[in-house]
Length: 324
Image 1 (cartoon, one colour):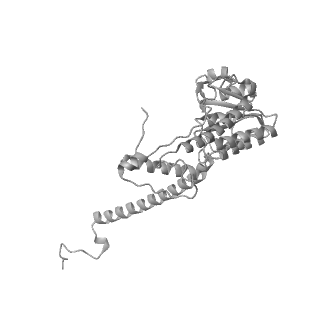
Image 2: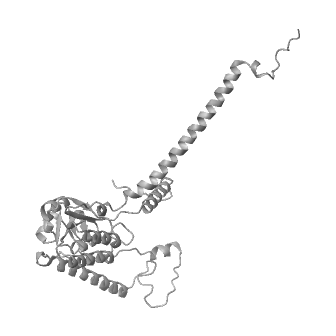
Image 3: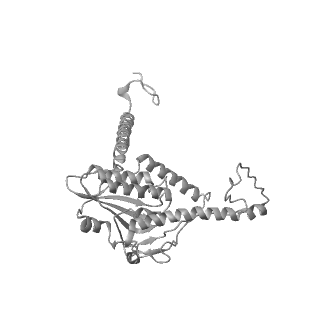
């Protein structure tokens, strides 16, 4: 009888040691399980991403226009932040919400809730004029301005177009004035040895250039421009508030007052919140928000820009501010 030498592998599978066969089987099974797990996670993430693309835009739809229902409601439009062409308080956004609110047949009254320090007189004027236009088209639908924390300058320019103005006793109201500010760097350039080269066609084309010495005649001219805008502002307030105003010497001097003091000055009609006005004044307690929402792309872009800015500040490449 010839015996096979020990220590050599055999070609017969049946003679492979049991532990080796079990190891191979376990490895194959583990690989199969891992593949199935990977496929499941792949499907999960694809479904989650698809749901994200579908659901997220729905969060920014103007649901107020879609869910007005059959009963009467009070329409709400938010005006929050600095009023400028590229902000959430731009005329395009606010006017869009106002038009939708007035066009809804179930709107019993319109509230513009203002929380703004002011901004562009042009954008404020656009909103103000559109409120007057819509009031003329819908004389039975009254407009109420409700002041939150602050309604100053351009914010009050808008509020003056409302039928009535309400505020909290601690709200900051007023700042009926116009301001233009800047810096001059003439001496700094001289100390740094930098020569200013300004080439312009037109005697005053370099008007108020911060790197050139200021000229008294330029200041006088610019004061007339600011004064004219200020007079426009005063006219808007007087036309909107009429005999309700109890003017003082400094009413149009750019000062601010509390909401409680503003009632005695005639800048505000009464104290009250948006819910109070809807319930007690309009008589339609249900509030439907007609404020246009940002498009999802805008939201994502803003978040990306904020993340980038925070990253740069953390590396010391951008200055950071902190309120203490």
